Image 1 (tube, rainbow, N blue to C red):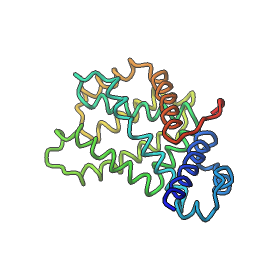
Image 2: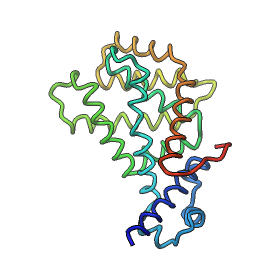
Image 3: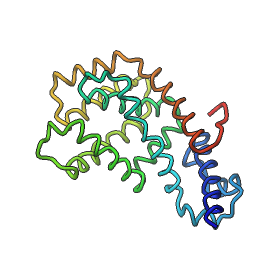
Image 4: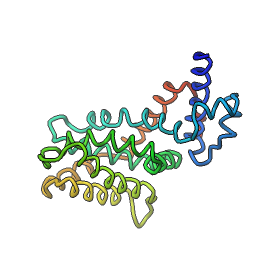
Length: 228
């Protein structure tokens, strides 16, 4: 029975992650998932009462490696705020490169369970990076601040770039707002912004996107269509 349940879960996750990446989270229906996975609707609902439960599995896989990628780009001798800036800049840029990723990220930052995972996951990172600026703050303080800054992230992701609001301007606006919240000195802010501007962030994010797709294909055992 457990083997059957595990196999059914694997089939569902394989189909769902592929469909989310190929056609978007909102455009993927439960009926389509059940049909393509070849499982009974009741079995699906027993394992995943909501689509959000599946999205949570995807979000956990996506977020697990984001900071490691950023740290590999930002020199280890630089303050950790540089890695934070790179990681958030990559994440925003990913949503400009792929509309289905935009859909996934926006839903992840909106829905209760997935957003809670992001808050908790990011709280630890924020405390490590900005703790010296707030010596009296504990985990709950950084958690509460993350709720606000995550809202900023979602807002900037949802607003598509255009000729009036290009990516470079979006990243600068977002990073300045975030660094002010976490009391990064203005002189340091300018250095961080100059560092981000020196990077070919679109090329870096494109590389991250393909590595992310490859990782998800391997993790969930599927192949994306070429036009995804």
